[in-house]
Length: 299
Ligand SMILES: CC(C)(COP(=O)(O)OP(=O)(O)OC[C@H]1O[C@@H](n2cnc3c(N)ncnc32)[C@H](O)[C@@H]1OP(=O)(O)O)[C@@H](O)C(=O)NCCC(=O)NCCS
Image: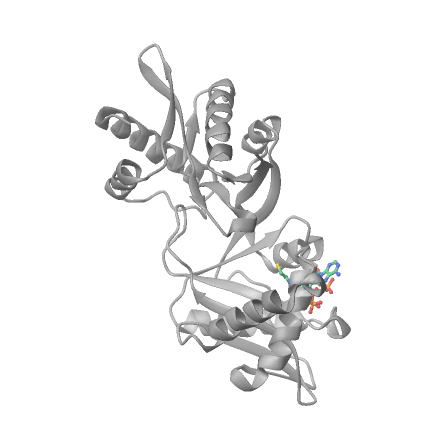
């Protein structure tokens, strides 16, 4: 892409994020245009632009990422802009055959969670895969303490329960942990153990009669386009199926967020899969507001 086009694309990306932030106060408008300029100039992947009467009316960028079984093109909230959806459709058509030729099986795109924007992508064949949501700390539901349950920091001695709860979470998210090979199961367990043992992460559990029955993990949210600073990321929230609907997830999340506030975090971010209706209900009831939807289309 010519330098002059890069500047036009960066200006469009900045404007796009400003529009997102104007529509949703939980989205951060500020980002480093110089960083984006450098990233686009040095990326091995092209940025597709639609030119209309000598000026750019749409752009689209996709990074190719992932494991061999899920190698995909990824477009962030700043990775596209369009003045009309027909221009976007043309770019998606060109880019898709390029991505397919490079071995990608699907295209993921982060789209502002607003009906008109979602509709534009849905006309192009995209559907919602997952949702990103944010809570301003201090706006959560009050924590109610329950007799007989102890909330505490977890650690290595809790790993056996952690593996089981992690598989229950995967099941709820639409994965099939029971179909994993021994190698895949070991890889998933190693990843979880490393996450729990990582000193950057905080691992919390609920215990009942000496048994761990719920867990979650928090860590500083990675700086992503649109994310507000001082955001903690909450993940791995799972309650043993025999202990659900007793308020334990609320108890656990409340405890984890109290710790986050004490550590000067101002916001909490989480994500859930579209197929996980109970998860979606839990987070929205808890006070989380959606920001971006991750959409997907097979290439
Ligand atoms: C989602 C999950 C963590 C909720 O845990 P829980 O301890 O049962 O939740 P709570 O009892 O604290 O419920 C709090 C509120 O969430 C909502 N909720 C929880 N489970 C629900 C269900 N099955 N159906 C509808 N609403 C539900 C309700 O509003 C509930 O309040 P109420 O009981 O006063 O109506 C639990 O179902 C779970 O572990 N699921 C599998 C893993 C998972 O999906 N984790 C979330 C990943 S995104």
